[in-house]
View 1 (cartoon, rainbow, N blue to C red):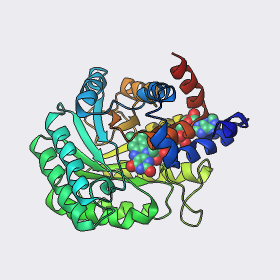
View 2: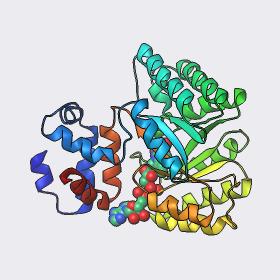
View 3: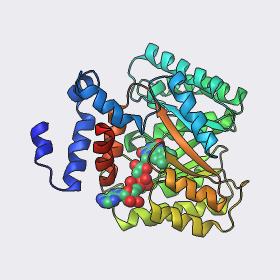
View 4: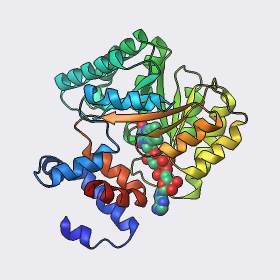
Amino acid sequence: MREDLTMVNDPAQAAQVLRTMALDEGLKARIPGDPVLGPLARKVAGRYVAGDTVDDALPRVAGILARGHRANAEYLGESCRDAERAVRETDVFVDLARRLPPGCSVSLDLSHIGLAISADLALENGARIAEATAATGREMIISAEGSERTDAVLAVHRRLGERFDHVGVTVQARLHRTAEDLAGLLALPGRIRLVKGAFLEPETIAYARGDRSLADAYLRGAQVLAESGHLCSFATHDWDLIHAVDALLGAPSADAPWEFETLLGLGPDRIAAMAERGHPTREYAVFGTEWWLYVCNRLAEDPNRLFQALVDAAD
Ligand SMILES: Cc1cc2nc3c(=O)[nH]c(=O)nc-3n(C[C@H](O)[C@H](O)[C@H](O)COP(=O)(O)OP(=O)(O)OC[C@H]3O[C@@H](n4cnc5c(N)ncnc54)[C@H](O)[C@@H]3O)c2cc1C
């Protein structure tokens, strides 16, 4: 891998190397525990990941609230294929829901809590988290996964939406199907989070990353959500999109059904500016030991973050 990195001479190449590193199980197992590279990788990850445990995450969440934003917390993990482990991972979310301060929501990948095993298990574990979040007045938002799981994710979300009114879901602007999915989701309660979409998808079903048509699709989705009055979240770090969504929303209001949302460490200036404009804002903090894939993918998304990572590692 070292040889690959020394050959990198443009940001697109660097991004591709990082995406390859993200999926490399050997590196994922070796680097965090390596006596030299492990501490460096953890320094880089520390900007984006709020620690390993609920105890680590709570002070970072308190910091977000102190800066005047709402907070969201997610315990990182996905594609769990062991049913007993999926139940134990669910226990962590239940603990999180009970201990988060008011003004916080909980997000999760359904495949982290059983969807990779069966829809029934994901529903059962999801209902436990929904009960814990309902009992403490928190929102629960289901994340979007790769397109091969979209039907299953939306089906579990629908069944939870029949029982609970605080369970939201994330949709990916880059998937062609999203316009139709959105129309159905507006009939269900729970916040709808609009993201570009992080997964590599074939161009037959998705707009390419960096293509103008993706920004256009995002704005069409944002327009539908804004006009609907439904609880929603505009989740992006793309300044052009943030400004365009701000322009279509009209007068900002602290009681608005929408919010602008960014991931921890990736857009503090963006949400600070939107809060200053008077919009509700939220920062999304992830925590847990499974941060390798997440951090590599975030670094790959913006070349500026590579330079930041070098500064953080040297700090
Ligand atoms: C709160 C939140 C929740 C999310 N949940 C999910 C989820 O459940 N499922 C999912 O699939 N994804 C999720 N995502 C991730 C999302 O799908 C995107 O992968 C991620 O946010 C990057 O897209 P972006 O909209 O931030 O804009 P980007 O396209 O990353 O652009 C952000 C900024 O990066 C810079 N930039 C990007 N590319 C370049 C370049 N080549 N050269 C120079 N500068 C560049 C630009 O300044 C741009 O303004 C979530 C994101 C957020 C914020």
